[in-house]
Length: 284
Length: 321
Image (cartoon, rainbow over all chains, first blue to last red; front, side, top):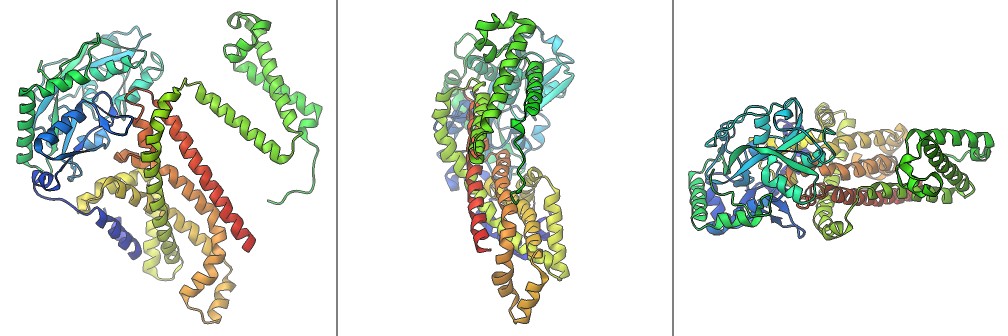
């Protein structure tokens, strides 16, 4: 970035004035800073009900958000949520803009080059969904146009390149002709609802999110058995490696599993297709 | 533009034009079959079941629509100019409302969230745009003077700056500043990063506008001021800029309006401004069109306010000149 150097003096002065507002550039131990600021900055998605979304009062809600709040509570600090785009989170190099991702991230080999995965806190199935008028079956989706979220495990699955860590075995049942990678699953849902084969032939996303959409009246249906099961983990930045923070996060998740508070949150937020509550915190 | 003194007869009052218009509109409505819509339903007493009315039904609906359309224009042509403008505006706006209505919107959903859209989203959008506009204006004045100077360094730096920042997409600049600056030790949060990108990008465009405005002042003004022994800053403040401002205002107002909407690009950084909330607030209930249309109306209303302000300022300088 030589951009700054090439500007004339007045601009440089202005820029420095602007940056000095936010120049509290943190360095060193992340956990110490969390304790010092009495605040943990949690990155999560704001467009992914029922995991995380903004409610009527402008407050973040959802399973991931509640897990984040509980972690902060047990750490004895305040929780603050930040909502960058998903691919910005998975790219790593957070520069301490936020301390931890509580955003249902699946540990993969490629992601673990830039991120640490201190604790897996639940497991969800990934499933294909199509418009309810569609007659396709899962094997017939091969060669068709499938929609998914950019930089997601579902996209990696469609590309035949899913390198999950500590996950149950699975097979690649679908090789799409075209993969449409959009900014989030909500964008895919809005395309699928237009009709079978209008913008795409189907989509793949997390099963609870598809069920929530069906619940909201979307004319879509889940196709076949889940494509694969994925473990979902907290993530921290490898660029600002802090084993102390990772250990503390792992300890809190274990504690929440032991006293069933994690299960209770899952039951509270997730419903099965038949309306019963779902506990996704138990490994398959 | 001057109002031409040669007034021709109104085209809409010539039978040949009316018939030609009617045929063209009829062909248009016939090509896009309107039988299955509200209009077919309206004509049910004449054409029977709209779906089974066939060629006759389609023709009947097209003729009725074409007659209504031409009659509407014919009636409007008898109004005075201001009345015509008002009626056409209202009719186009009603068409837009009909377009929005066709999405089957849930009004209670919009009502429950519009407070947040305004208190959080609109506030952030205006805050980001306003700060960026101020900084961009300062950059533009400095940049324009540098581009007009005979100092090689000042000109080189200013021209490199305008070339670079006009040459990169704004979204790319947002990402470069947000992701790139921390790499060299400057930690910028999302909002300052967005403001920096907007200021630098629009500062570059406005540098060119200001430069052109200053250059449009005749050379004689400079020479006369110098002959009177004025210093550069005094010439600029009291003689050149007051004359350049009326020329600069219309394109600058354009830039302000464009920036207001381009501030939505900051939403990729997760800032809860208008566009971001429009994309996310509908998520929980999977109702996205409601929020998108609400944001559209808010942006439009804001732009109209800016247009009115620009017109007022222009009017003020017109009287002075």
